[in-house]
Image (cartoon, rainbow, N blue to C red):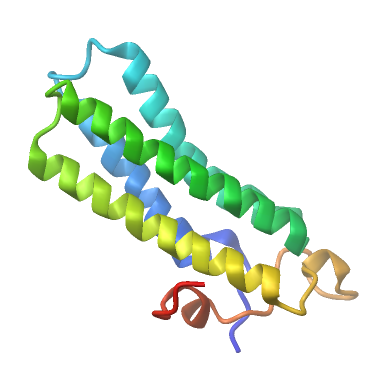
Length: 151
C-alpha cells in the first residue's frame, strides 16, 4: 500500500488543477472578458476545487478531510453550472462546454470515491499517528481514485 505524502500526489487534486487551468484559459477569451462577475465566479469555483482538496488533506484528520472533499465536490458542481452559464451566453462553444463538463464530472467522481474511502477507512488520519509526518495518509491512491466502483 502506497502512502500519500502530500496532496499533490492525489489524482483528484491533479485533475482539479487541470480543470482550473482549463477554466482560466476559457475565461481569457475575448468573448467572455467583459462579463467580470462570471469570470470571477468561475475562476474562484475552479480554484476552490483544488484548494479544498489540499486544505482538507493538510488538516490531517479523516473527518475534516472528508468534509473538505465534500466542499470540493460541491465546487466542481458549481464550475459545471458556470460552464452552462458561459455556454448559454454564447461565450464558449459546444466543444469547449463538452470539455469542461467532462472534466468536472471526472473530478467530481474522483473526489466522491476518495471521500467514500476516507469515510469508510479505519485510519483516522495522520494527526493521530505518533512518530510519523503529520501530512501522510496510509492509503493507495490508485485503488481509491482509479477504481470503477461508484462509492
